[in-house]
Length: 144
Image (tube, helix red, strand yellow):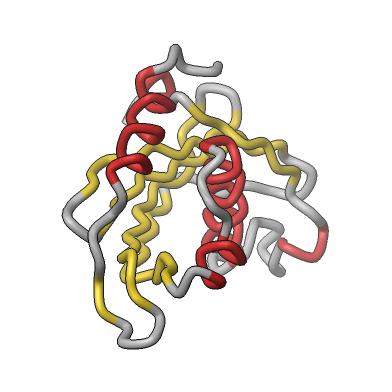
């Protein structure tokens, strides 16, 4: 996906502890980067955070995460992490996450969540208000 297709970005600087002996970010850290950016995306929506969701007995459960590596990031690089809601089903949501340095596209990923009742661990309908708020965020002019 092109950088301009994202309405939300979060910047993150690669720390020394995140690089491996090859001098590049160790592959497992990209899921942490995705999670940090997704958390900031969610914060930008103003929707209930994980603690509030849990207190209501419903939460977003991670269902699937994928990563595709195109080019490595290195120590002290400032990464721009784009997050975009690609689809909302009845109880699931799919997000595209991509990492850039400037216009260089390094990493692509996908995060799938299921909104679920925490007691029975079964999916429940994504609230209409959530759909509207996410749609509103996605239709704003991209933040480049």
